[in-house]
Image 1 (cartoon, rainbow, N blue to C red):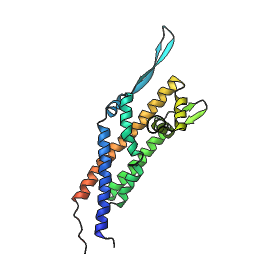
Image 2 (cartoon, rainbow, N blue to C red):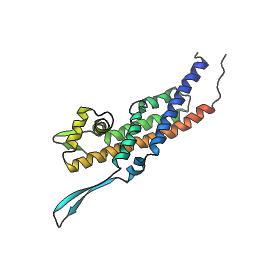
Image 3 (cartoon, one colour):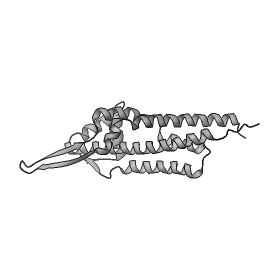
Image 4 (cartoon, rainbow, N blue to C red):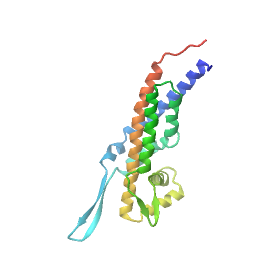
Length: 203
């Protein structure tokens, strides 16, 4: 039989982690990037009089992206989604509520695997959505890693491909944000349920 004191300590630790997750989620929610990312679009404008084409690229401002990514990296490291979701295994909650959380992580992982559905091939190299996300995240913004920086150089060799790669990255960031905001709502409900639950005294 487990000791009540130990159970409470474990539960309190989980609550603290969920609260930290929600604090970081709220910080992301208020970023200017989050407001701008849904308005991003790109296209090709053809000037028939000059027989030239130009790329139209509307996306969040770079300074807003960098500020947002400083917070997002917490969810890639200290607050990894898999680790946070795994905490629900140890909680006394309705199984249906746990299933929602577990299934939502699978949906997120599938969306990250598929991305926008565009196939990216540059000079004979094919890049998956995950590789594109990592290349920008850790090749340009967070503690740049040389192999990933080399990927970015390849992405940037051609204006159209550079636009497509940037669009894919912002899309994948938006997938992260959608999952973070959804899970933060579940966390809030869970925290309230745990804090309102009667505490066993044990003998």
